[in-house]
Image (cartoon, rainbow, N blue to C red):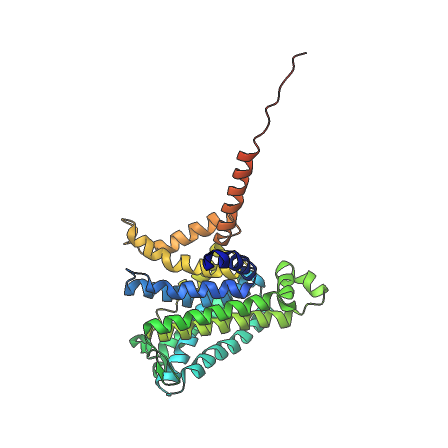
Length: 351
C-alpha cells in the first residue's frame, strides 16, 4: 500500500484539529502572506503594495483594540505612526544604535503619548474626543515640519533596510520580517482580548455606566486601550520607515487616520482578521481605481468611495468583509439542504 494513502487520512484530522487553534491559523496566514512575492509574475510594485498592506495591518490591528474592542475613537493615530517612523529612523541612521532597540523605542514613545491621550479621553467622548485627537495629530504634524534637525522637514528623512546581528536585510527579507511582526501581534491581541482584560474592554464598549457599576475601572482600561493602540501605531511606523526607507510630513495626514477607521469598519469591527482584511481593502482601493477609466485621474476619488463603502457596510453588511466567507458557506449549506429536502406539495381536498 502506498504510504501517502495511509498518511493523508491521519494528517487531515490533525490539521483540522490544529486549525481550531488561533495561533496556527495566524501562523499559516503569515506563511502564505510571506510567500506571495514569490509568485511568478509578481513585480516590484506589487511587492511594495504588499508591504503597505502589512505595515497598515499592524496599525489597523492596534486601532481595532481602541475602536472595535473598547469603543473609543481617535482621528489622530497617523501622528503616532509618524512618530514611530521618525524615532526608528533617527536611532538607526543618526545614532547608529541597533535596529531592535529602534523598534522598541518607536513603540514606547507613542505608548507614553497614548497614555496622555487616554487621560484626555477620560473627560471627552464621541465627537469631542475625535476632534481633540485630530487637533493633537495636527500639532504633532507641525512638529514634523518644523523639527528639521530630527525629521528633515519637507526634505524628507531617508533611512536604510534593517541590520540585525550582522545580517543586512534587503527588501524581500524586510517584508518577511514585517509579516512575522504582524503575526506575532495578531497572536498577542488574540490572547489579550480573550483574557479578563478583553472582557472588561467589551463591557466598557457596550456601556461605560454599566461597566463602571460592575467594577470596571474606566481610568485603567481607557488608558490601556489608547496606549496599546498607539504603541502598535509606533511599530507600524518603524516598519514603514525601514521598508520604504523614506518619510516626510505630508505622508502623516488626517486622511491616513480616516483610512484606519475605514479599515476597521469595512473589515469588521472587533475582529483581528477584519483589521487585516480592511487594511488590504484600503491599500488596494486606490490601485484598483487607477484601472477604472476616468476615476483614476480624479483627486480624492478613493476618499469618496471609502465613504460610500462605509455607508453601504453599516447599512447592509454591519459584520464587515470578514464574514463574507462564512456567510457564503451558510448560504451554500442552506441551498444544498433545500435541494435534498424539497418541500412536499400540499394537496387540497375539495369539500
